[in-house]
Image (cartoon, rainbow, N blue to C red; front, top):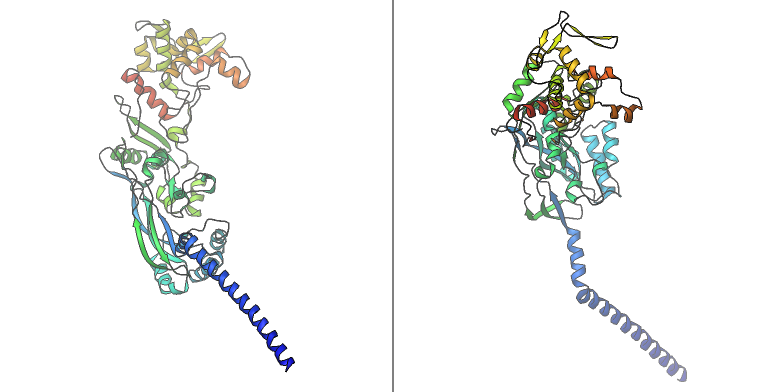
Length: 472
């Protein structure tokens, strides 16, 4: 009997202990539930919402470029793009491998794209194909349930109606490279379908043409598939800009040049507006916009006429006889000659024992400045150049825009060279030779300038020295 009572007391103590432990556990659980529900409820609710709501930036349509009469120079056409979400890199790789087999991608393409599916990269979508064909689209749509994270989106690609007839002026657009991304770059630049200006007016007016991004809120399931669209804020298109360029004139010049290598710049001398800027041959910017193919790129590089060089702003050449006008103006300014001064041309000019020939062996006879310009008499400008000196010639050349970039704003412009005694000492460590002045007096020797610079020079002469010049 005593043993039974002892066992009952032991069981009672154990029941009390177990009950206490259960009570403490229940209390801790209730306390935790209270903390999660009421103290951190809003925070956790937001986190849960973030797990099922996906915010997607929408790339804005790029602003159009038109010529002075409203003809389209650069616009946007619709295309279809194949996108892959990278939120779950493991799942993304599995899906990618299925796609690669389905669409028969080359080993090179697979290797290039596969490296972009990486946990360290931002968890946004990546663009796999910029221009999806109808055949590819049909196959993808049919197998879409087996391809989590894959979607086909409507996009836009930059279209240039004039193709290679205005490519050096307008430039082209391309994807944002890793080198162009900075720590403070806006999220828009990290979007897979975002393209920016790479050359010409496209990069010059990038801020005006880019526009403002939109935003789309999507509900997705655990497989990353979109369930429904919750809210969309549409993007704001970039600014529409009318350039001073005349598209018909631009086309006419290219047609006249044909297969010849050359450059032409046409300006309105009264306003300084650029009416045409042609470098021939050129490239098709549509090929760059779509994603340039290796064979096309190789052909451009192999072309001996250098279609990738904008000869109008970066090609530097001896100006030749066009430079004589500046030499004559330097002589007038320094009082070495006046409009009535005459210099006799026997067909040659002597500096010491060295003979410099005029282009006309029999000579031009007595020439004043006006006649010498009309006949392009070398001897006249040899004489003026010797008498006025290279420093005065260089000062006059700089006054009319030579030896420095014009400030038009197009990337890649080169400033050329206007030599002088000081320039030669600094660049070559050598003294100036008087014979170099004679050569420079007819636009030869070390004198080099771009076609754009020469157009600016002539415009300033014709309009009395106005320095305005613009393309928009």
